[in-house]
Length: 207
Image (cartoon, rainbow, N blue to C red; front, top):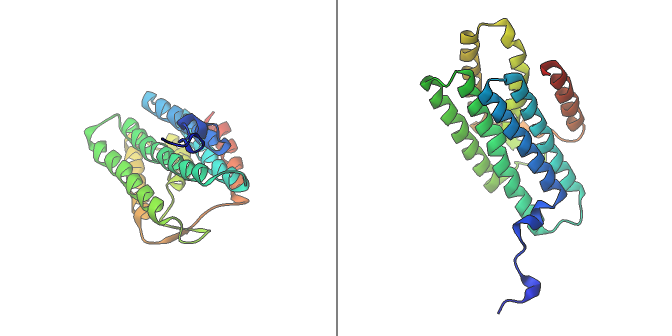
């Protein structure tokens, strides 16, 4: 008979954890981004995914500052964050590309490669983690959508057909850097405030 004191915690027990609430808020933003991308409202989609990045960074900052979290909280939070990342930074850009390409079959290979690369990268990170406290192996996936949000500002100055090719090529270049054996910095500390300012500015512009 199991000791009641050592019963397995429920799933909703972890959902009440503050960093996990932030992670789920980021997931909501990503789902909204996907929804608007499917509808073809690309500015709204970009606003959604940028706020997903903000919440993704925030959950880690809050988690590191909380000293009362158990090893179970940390392990669960890490898994939740990784699964949400594949939605935010894998599924979202794939849907964005497909929708901007008007769901042409020519865009399907690119969409698959985006999701596959995200799965490979996140699996690698879950096993090996950071190179050190401030360094990733390869370009972090969230950087893809941060750069995408800036590049899309120029969409109105270029024909749809030409920009769809540029978008396709840009996302494929990102994949190379995501998986490349190069070291890239992990943006922490003051960079979080830079991200918030960047997100607020682009929210106003796209809004």
